[in-house]
Each structure stands twice: as structure tokens, then as C-alpha cells.
Length: 435
Ligand SMILES: [Zn+2]
Figure 1 (cartoon, protein in one colour):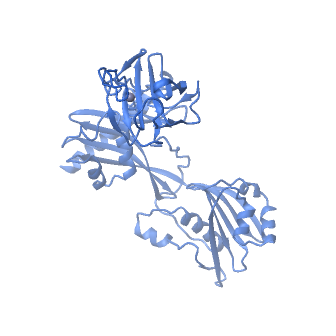
Figure 2: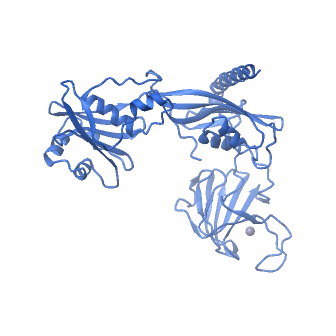
Figure 3: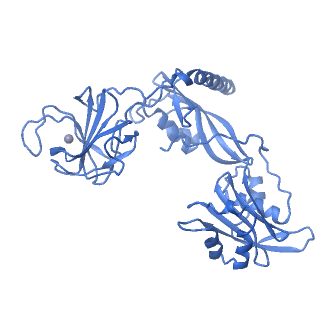
């Protein structure tokens, strides 16, 4: 999961639940085009009625002089090699009009457009561009407004707020479906499964009566719900054992989850180097070899998967070998620390980053499943070495991922204790209200 992907709320001082739209003419349109492109999911039906304006349709605006004016709006997703000029041409904007726009002050703000982002253009009843909205992401962009014959171009940012939501669920049979019933969004449940996936096997370990509670954020743009944010703190009680995970933004900029004591919830290694596979042969020191037909120790685990399935590094480390090696075929070896290394064999091909001395992160693709070397069919042969000795990857107890480092520990403990207190408050309030 692309997990640590969010940003701090930088704009806290915007109005909260309601957006008041008391505008006329172009000012109204500027708002509408921003809002409509945001594809806002509005929970409040009343607000929805006020804000839902069909796209790419003629919109009737009553100007101050009460003479009705029609506007047309066109929208384009920026593709490779697009420029502002090529986009305006595609939208049938006249050359004169294009020239006026690009000669306007600050038009350079519109020259740095990116593939995949959107530009919408509004035309007035003279078929002249009256408004351009370049949406960089759901919370900022650049706008150009036609005012008295000139285009005024500026960047804008929308008001972002985060709201905290508390939920608590007792499991009867499924963490997921009962979470959904409680109104926890799908993405938040996925995050929960990810956070606890290192400690709890959700297919085998869950028992009726297990429970979890969490505080997560909801992101609001100009007071309206835009998306579900991150879990700030979660507590999972599995067979009587309590697991607390707290999100913390590290100085490096990324966020991770830690236990109240500062241990990383992640482990240094993933259990499996191939998704969508099954184990076709286990670690066995007395196995009869399928090609040699004699007893030969099988010093790794085989994962059968389709040829071309990505093989990922199970832990952070450095590539120390990436080439053909006898029966192993195409082999990658990653050194994770003085004590740990892993090997990935029979690869069909290597990923382009898989070169000697290259630093690799857990989960990055190293190569693709194949049957090079001594293999009967496409599979990954995976080995786990501890202190240079073969070890059964399915049985080895993995070390924890890096704990919070010393320089950040005091700040973390503060942060964690506030969140734990918040969670306890919510929990006791919840318990009271259920009585
Ligand atoms: Zn094998």
C-alpha cells in the first residue's frame, strides 16, 4: 500500500461546514468550476442541492444588470507534450485570444502544467475565454480571470481541514464487514489491516469478541468532505492481547506507525517475496531433487507463480549479487545487515534498478518470476540467510523494523501520550453512551 502518502494540513483557518456562495458573474463561475472539478462527495443533502452544477453544460448566470449571459465550459486532462497553447487550440480558442492570454502578466504560472492534471476553460457568450482553471491537485491550482479585457492570473489554495473521527467495533466474525457496518470507510479498514498485518494473521488469528477502536481523520476542503485521511491511533485487542499503533511523522518527512514505546509496527522483513503465489516446495534438508532425482537439501522456499510476476525485496538492503549463477539461474542477493541476507533465484529477468551496490527498499521489485537455471517450471526460489547460514524463511523470527530514533523519541512519546489519552477519553465516553 502506498501508505505514507499524506500531507500536513497547512490551512487551518478556513470556515468549517458551510460554503456560502453569494457571488455573481465570473466570480461565481470561478467558484463553481473549482468545486465541480473537485468531485466533492457531499454528505449533506442540502449542500449538494446548492452546489451540484452539471459539467460541460451551458450555465445561466444572472449578472447584476439582470441581463442573462451564457457560459460554456470545457475540460481537458493534460497529456504528454501538451502545452497551454496546444490545449487552448484543442479547445478552439482563437489565436488572438491565445496571444492575449500568454502575454498576460504571470502567464508563466500556467506554463508549468503536468501530465494527468486538468485544465478547464470557460467561454463567455462571445466565445472568448473568460476563465481558466488549472487544477494541480484537489487543493490548489492556478486561475486566470478575464477582467476588463485583461487576464488576471494567480495561484490559489483551497481551505483544507481535518476532522477526527472515533470508531469502535467488536468483531463477531469479520473485522472488515463489521467495520463497514459501523461506517468506517474502506480505505481506513485497509490501512488498519496493513498496520496490524505484521502482528496479526487476519485469516487465522481473529476470534469473536476481538475488538478494535481507532481515531482517523477525514479531510475537508472548504468545509466539505473530500477524502478519508489517515489513522492517527488504533488499538486492536486480539485474543486478549492489546496492540496499540500510533502514527508519527518522522523528521525525514515520512510517517510510520509505532507502539507506545516507540517500536516500529513493521517488521524488518515481509513474509513473502511474491504476491499471488503459492508455496510449491518448503525448506527441507532431505528433499529428493525434482531434476537431479537424488537427495539434495532444499535450502529455501519455492513460490509458484506465473512467469513475469514481480519479485519484491522482503527487506531494506543493498544488492550484492545480480547475475547468472549455475543452477540458481538469474539470481539476486540482498544484504540487509551484517547478519541477514536474502536470495531470489530462477528470475526471468532483473528489474533495471537491480544492480550491484544499489540500495533497495522493502517491497521494491527486484525482478520477475521465471525458470532460469535448474527449474522445472516458473517459480521463485527464495532463501533466507542468518549469519551466512541457510534458515527456513517461513520459520525465522523476524527482527523489528527500525524503532523511533533517539533524537525523535521524546517528541514521539509526547505525541503518543496525547493520542492515547484522546483514545481513552473517546473509549470511556463511548462506554458511557452504550450503558
Ligand atoms: Zn527452490
